[in-house]
Image 1 (cartoon, rainbow, N blue to C red):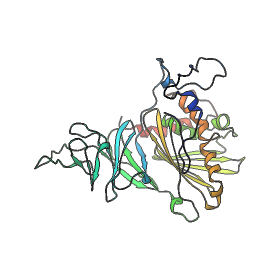
Image 2 (image 1 turned 180 degrees about the horizontal axis):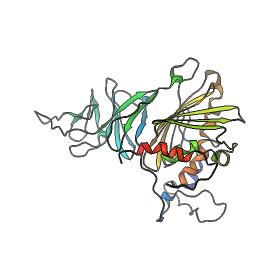
Image 3 (image 1 turned 90 degrees about the vertical axis):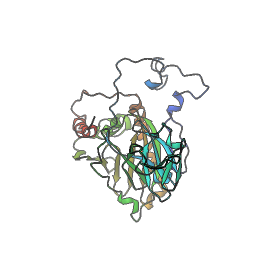
Length: 355
């Protein structure tokens, strides 16, 4: 998997990842973990042809709301196959506009429903023609008359469609949603742009990415900024919601990040930029990003520069190789000045309930 970005009007971006992972037909690169100084970045351990003893597993996929697609990805009658939360899923939109997210395989003989077709309000299986509604219930077996068995259903996930995203609720224990996601005020506000989309897939653990927001020390060494500390940053929680406030004195800017569970957040720089971020685990080691940038109309001329400041070499892309190669420490050796990592983990633990 390569790290690429897809912003409206842009194609895939070439990154350092492309120089490490061989393309089809190419000779695999030398193992850069052992080939000497100056030979380049380390190859991700999952791409090495070796067994590594004692490498910790990343945390499991946490419970919460995640984005499975952008609303614009789904026209009426569309069916998409997507891997997320370690599962094969299918998302479809009925002819009337309703959206559903279901497990991918038919309960009959296991055909993948992503190869099926929409017929009105139902998804028809490509194998034997069974039809399923948005709740996952089978509503037609075309070659059988009479009662449909109660077990003829495919697991469906709670869905919300808002702010240009299709969100679905995942809970390892099957529990119903216990919080709702706020809407984004800037989306319909006068003087603000339409959403400018950024997409990417990364090698990263979801919790590792989230901890970055309270890891103040890394701003100096990874992003080349002044060190933040308790005097310039705050971390507060309220049930499944958290807030991080960071004041960058050099730029005279205040960043406020509102986090809604493990997968959704809103980064707001008043009067300058708002970013609605959806970060969805594909599995324990990979995540998919769907971010919407909202900018004041007055700054649209420099939109590319603003977005690159967040996602480019001095922003997101500086974190990518760290997340790719690091391991998750259950009991990290923390010292004074590391920031509220312990407090963050205590708050985050609620999203592993039911395991």
